Length: 122
Image 1 (tube, rainbow, N blue to C red):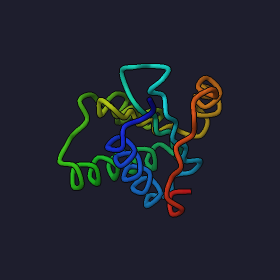
Image 2: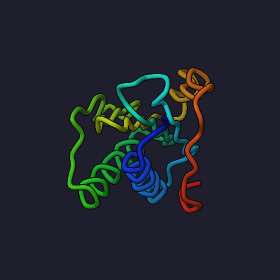
Image 3: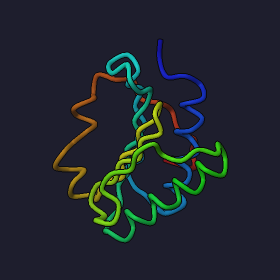
Image 4: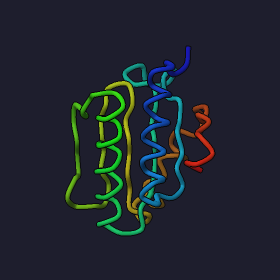
């Protein structure tokens, strides 16, 4: 049993919002089988602290607009290095490029299926 369709819809909206703010290396992973507490991770990068914060703002705005939900938890906002938005079934990681390379979340979760994203988000 993989990620629920509603989770994938939220991932797609968040990925498109990130792309609107020129996020790079946008990747979505179906972690439902491995974690059990969440369905999907969306991982995106920004080249600077202000860009990371702008990406986070845009994701929150679009998800609120489309789904009328706010993150249940938000960690790291303001520092612009690694911001985590926890929507329950979807966790969004917005990382500065340097931190993304260092922590290599995709490598940690490499055994999880990749969720296909809209072309505009790639």
